[in-house]
Length: 344
Image 1 (cartoon, helix red, strand yellow):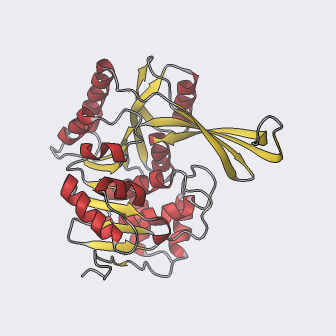
Image 2: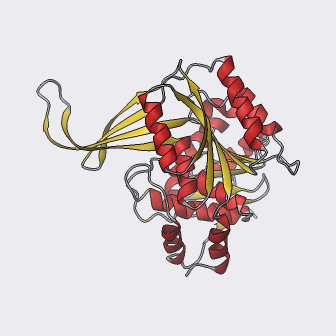
């Protein structure tokens, strides 16, 4: 049965506003079936049954915010092309407020995934990742300055496509709301950009990203604590949430308090977009003034829902309620320390 505290949290999340800054892209899914091998090369022949376009990257984060009852503002970059038009249409259909900068020198990022019998056969990426030109950076900075004062929570969704740079992160750290307080900054990182993320409020890497950022293994059970120690030293971030796949999550509320949240996923069909769901749910719960541990537990339930579906899925409030209700108790425990023993 869902607790009163969690039910109240779900209600408080409704209508909370979150700004997403990052690499928005178009996800293109081609669904088909395979019954033969090509005579031209030893590859499967996919007979196309259906195609679908969805918001990807930072756009999927925004889609998750809206799916859970929040209000999303998307700040990013698209090209002046057909994919950009399609992406703009999807954002509008999802009731996402947009502040997108158009760059006619770049193409809109599109990832095409070809699937047959629910298995991904191949992925084709169309993208341009060269450094942004000065006028585009200037337009992004102006947009952040204008919108930042109206948001208490900012998600940085970095997919390494060029939007997240030193000047952008400096601008976010310099933002002040109407109350004079800086918005809280949550970052879904890309390993090559780790040095940009110093002094943010919370970082949400998966185990691989955390390991690459720390330069050491994140293997269970002692790895997460070692990795966290290295990341806190490197970045001086306030908090850290490492997603561990089948092992659930490791939450570090500063260097001194660590918790292990086991996974709530029953079946795993596709992990595409799970990180987007985690950071979106976490941010929306934080916007509703949830304790960080409650926000992380809710994000874990949301991730458990989406990995049980094919493609970049989103959770729903009803799905979250069912997941929470089906769990007898949230078995949050102390996380094993660097020596493999439970931390106090």
